[in-house]
Length: 333
Image (cartoon, rainbow, N blue to C red):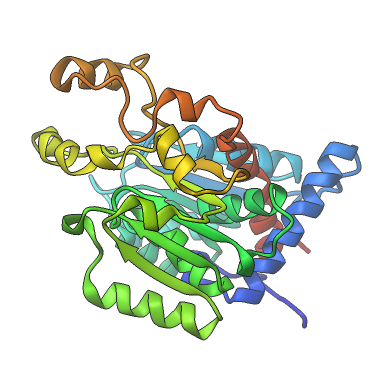
């Protein structure tokens, strides 16, 4: 089957079919091998990409910049205070300007409607580097990493997300897992479950592709036989500090500990996290959380984070390789 993604935008994983997801993962693996072997061929010479960051970033920015440079493209970084977006100019007008100058646009920010406006009016491929609703490039890297750490096909894997069930990464993982037919479980306090229609749609998509989507409150049955246990931060960028006590109260029982990993009853189970992670007190936020709540970690213990089960830095590296695949597939000759 021929796959052609040229000129396409990726705003959520709903923009990709199961075959297109698998194609991008194969391409990413080939590009990674070529980079390691020193045989990579640039396919994006003379291309220019605008990188809009309304939220700060480490992995997304680094991934897009290095992927572009490796492939011969140039990038312009537009930071939170580096443009008129939202202050003097609408996203619609910004899109019509940048689309005449650049060959593609990446957006990392808050509202999904912002990246949708870019895609609607720019006339060039637009990539969602993270919004409040979705994080598709993260999930592509996660799936690539999962394939590297097990002999199983994606459709044979079991993944459990432990934490906030409405989290943008959790929902993006659930969407991707449903498309590739995975057994995907969300383990979350009921107060943080997605809306019923979202749960129904995910379950229906999973059934259509031979997979399973389930959601529950109890950790032990949720992680049993999981190949991968995934979590994300409890306190996202821009989170109102007034909400911290309630969120910490709800999510404290869902910290990924050694006992959680043992509860998988799978000696080969791996721990995953999209990063950054609050696994100790060695950050400003970590120190403040300890001072206010007496917690020396939040969503994962340092013991698990630093263990041999943790593959979080493999995920971080693969952000660059899967982003590169996306750029090549949508912009390359």
